[in-house]
Amino acid sequence: MKGGTILVGLFLIFCLFLGYQYNAVKSARLNVDAAYGQVENQMQRRADLIPNLVNTVKGYMKHEEAQIKAVTDARARLMNAGSPEELGAADAELTGALGKLIAISENYPDLKANTQFTELMREISGTENRIAVARMDYNEAIRFYNIKIQTFPGTFFADMMGMRPLPQFRAEEKAKEVPQVAF
Amino acid sequence: MDKRSVLDRRCYVVGIFWLLLIALASVVLAAPAVLPKPSSLAYSVDTAGMITAEDAAKIAEMGRGLDAATGAQVVVVTIPSLDGASIEEYATTLFRNWGIGNAEQNNGVLLLIAKEDRKFRIEVGYGLEGAITDGYAGSVLDGMKADFKSENYSEAIVTAYAKLTQKAYEEYGAEIPENVKDVAEEPFWGVLLGAAIFFGLIALLVYAVWGTLKGILHVLSSGRLFQDSVGSAGGGSSGDDESGRYRSGGSGGSGGSFGGGRSGGGGASDGW
Image 1 (spheres, one colour):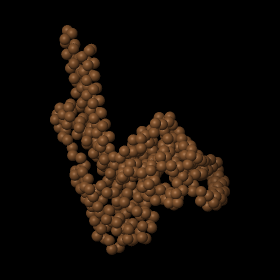
Image 2 (cartoon, helix red, strand yellow):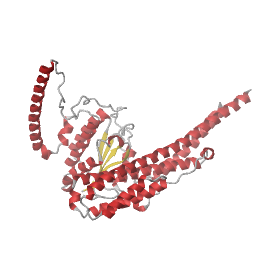
Image 3 (cartoon, helix red, strand yellow):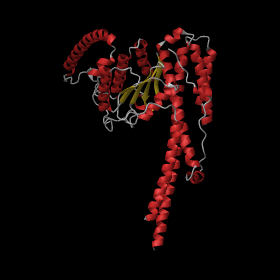
Image 4 (tube, helix red, strand yellow):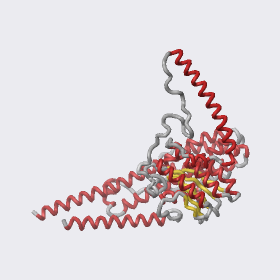
């Protein structure tokens, strides 16, 4: 009888342990999804600011249609991005195009004096920073998740739950530079 | 019973081992080494010697008031140098390490000033991003530039602090205390403010008289007593019934510690 009780007890403990590990892996995965949602959120925020920027800038930068178009195209590509890889690539492209546009805007002093432009640039700059932070948090969540499913005891559950290690959000070197606006 | 406790202990040990490993890894991989968190809550941490004792006291008074009323924490930190880190990274790391603002509401604001690098940044917690937009943060920094260029740091810092505190009060629709309002207004504009108030009062008088006249006409025509006058104009608040009713900071963050809030990288940076 005593042996039986011990076995039942051990079995219960084992079940609790299983449950705990399952929860741990699952919540790590959910954190990754939440962090990714935040990245998309901030990118969307920047994408929303861009039409305003284009409108403000168009009137002043009459001969820079090519660069303005580059920004608009990059934004469209970003909105259509599906996977994290596509998003990363589109984001890098948009950051590059925006950076060039900002650099060109240095040659238009009356544009720089426009308060709406100044305000918009601050918002975009702030959003770029938010994207950087969101990506950092996302990579952090992925790192934690990968550790969880690639180390004991998470490895058991990873296979059972069909969870694979995820790649980090790789930013190209260009994209890491937040467009600096000098006032 | 014995076997269970041994197994539990082993699970704990394994768990703690991994936690420590991850914690160590995150410390090693984390961004810059920032100023360590002070042992007790402080609204100004002045390691670069830019704030006078008197101004530090003013800041502490404003900060305490805001914290007690709303749980929001505005902290100003001055450092001699960023040591090569970017000010954005430094600010975000410091903000999160110290946990500025209430943990649930994320209503913290950090004003970080790096003296030798001649850079400053306002980092805003998630919860206050509506009141203190990137644009507004940028304009507060702009306001500091002139004074900073002439090395008149302390006053500019106090004014900026008051402006940020005022915005935080506005977010919660709370009554802005006199000491904050006085400082938030640029001293140079005091005269203009006086004139504006004077004309504002005249306009108010005219509006009130007109409103009363309208009211009397209305009463006479419909025979009903006109109860509420339209739009009571309050002092610094938005003048509607909601003013004075604010969300009290959940856990009462005035217990002398940072609330554990987070920032998402919002705010503005600039240099002088």
